Length: 501
View 1 (tube, helix red, strand yellow):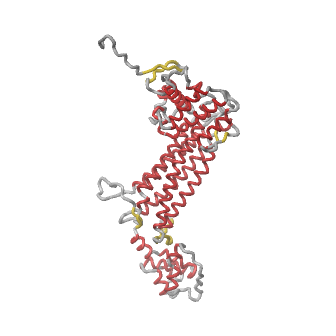
View 2 (tube, rainbow, N blue to C red):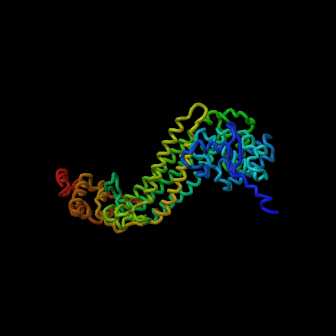
View 3 (cartoon, one colour):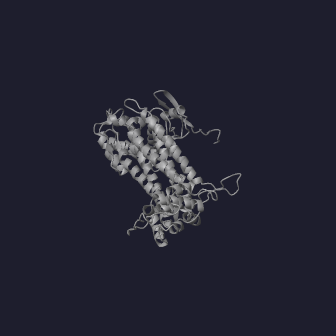
């Protein structure tokens, strides 16, 4: 027989599906269907598919899996269909078919397109596992079966909270590692003296270790704030369906699906006491966004400090040396910029902007629903992902390789007049001020001026200005007598003379 007698039948490249608006042509191999196709046509906004947030895809699969189990338990879905749906959800959570979650992160409809995309993908994966063709919705239907007892209005916010909680765990891993890196540097630099500064002016001595330990402490405080929000994310409205009345769902569904969700996630989830309120409320998202803004702004302040402390190398502070990462100029040879702290600064700016977006979207909700949760969720998940990436790159490419410029730090401490502050309780403010002015004008050592003025002997001055006393790094228990009025004068210390120096 010849090929002409038996021509090859071409494989169809598309299939036809229908929705309430009519027929839609779908790529034959696509696991999504008509509702997703409509969304792709309607929302070509950011060119960012929801799969860009893998934790959201995982969360949607978890919600659908818990719903299938609950519907099976309550007799709303036969066990065969429930089993197919659960297998499909497990495949999605394993990382399969994430590329099929294609609708834009920015969409109208309060997340309906995202929920429909999930329904269709889960249904078609299940059909394939059952040996049926894609689109055979007579066997398993995306809405009647996968979306049974559900509405976008309880699925989407529940999935949003789960996704954020999962993403926060990823952020905390990186945040904790960054804090540990700063703490390590605090120990490494524990005895490196430097001049502290307030309002960019010289203040009093401290150690570089104390400064870096402070960075670690402030990061730890933000971790505590993040952990405080996690329980709030575990209050859900699943079972509320459209507006909180639970219409179309078994009265036992909310408690049943919550129990399965708790089992699947290994965390205790609770059903909101007032499902009407919970369905329209976005307070937890505002609080979460605010906590992320706090963490970002404080991290940005640390990066500002790293840039200032490393400024130079010749005409700046030059107290620390950041690891060189790349050439800093196309015109100035040898220039190296603090690019890693700079990129983290920019992450912080974006986080603050996204927080404004979340605030406005939360305010714009009306009546029984907030239609703008898609931009809220995208903003928060973007912030979490960028902050995690920023913490990781700051640690790996900057903090772990920071060196102290010990010689420069030592030189600045030795010539600093900030040490005179330690003498103020013993010689008085006026005399200390005069000494500071004299030291600045003459460039002489404060200790020499104190001894020459007859205020103290050198041994006493050196004790009061010892590094451990200046930095309070070692508890000082012995008292030091105050210089009496009869000796608290020096040739340059009268108020009139002090002002004229």
